[in-house]
Length: 299
Ligand code: GUN
Image 1 (cartoon, rainbow, N blue to C red):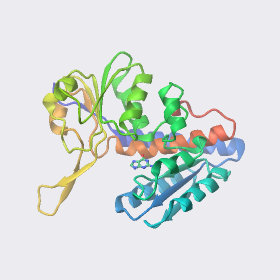
Image 2 (cartoon, helix red, strand yellow):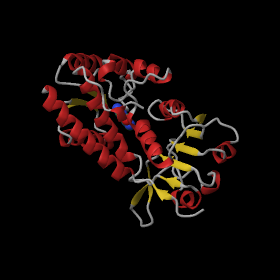
Image 3 (tube, rainbow, N blue to C red):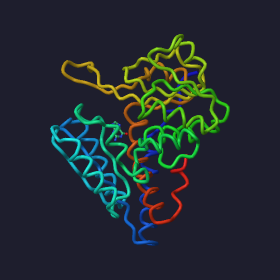
Image 4 (cartoon, rainbow, N blue to C red):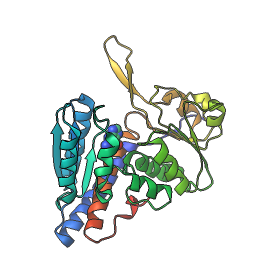
């Protein structure tokens, strides 16, 4: 097989953001509630600054309120916990996101656990992780939720399909596996200690790669006709000296010769993360106002 369908995450995310903006406008018209998203950033990592700025801008564009809280790298945990407490009690805030990673001297788990689970739009609080695990998700992590939406749109029914998740991070791999299980896939999680990795990959109808290793998954690892979702964003040296380029965890050109559909990097999964963050913020605001969340926020 050649010429896989290119899974256009950018276009899908744009449509989702428009639906979220319409939902936010409707919520405001019905109840006067404007969804509010607070984003907390500690330290001066340039990539995190860009992510956080993009998240804030996206919220404003969707008709939401955006609140930025930026701290120096030497900020202590007590300061952070006291801010979270204030945000939990603030009725204008419906979603709280603490950008990860946090500096090493801060206990990230303690900070995540301090967030009100109803405002945990990242879906990282143990209550939300547990609810996802028992098939009763409240707020699901944004990147895997975005991957699931793309799969539902491009792969059709997922029931009974063999899904392989490569990677077991709390942000992507583990919640991705739970979401696929919830969609009735037969799920395998592979990781750095998995034996017979290539053979395991070759059995997958659906392959989600989230390992952070540039172009690790080659074309001959992929089952012909599989749907491939590449969560990796890796910067590598470009063809010209001094230039760099972004690649995924999947060797795109090779995968496109074998797969039925594959996400490009950039323009695949990446734009879905922010769109799903907005969707979760709208869902949290709806629930706060006693209304049901948008159906697509319920995986
Ligand atoms: N760092 C990398 N991805 C994420 C994410 O989805 N949420 C947060 N809070 N931090 C991240």
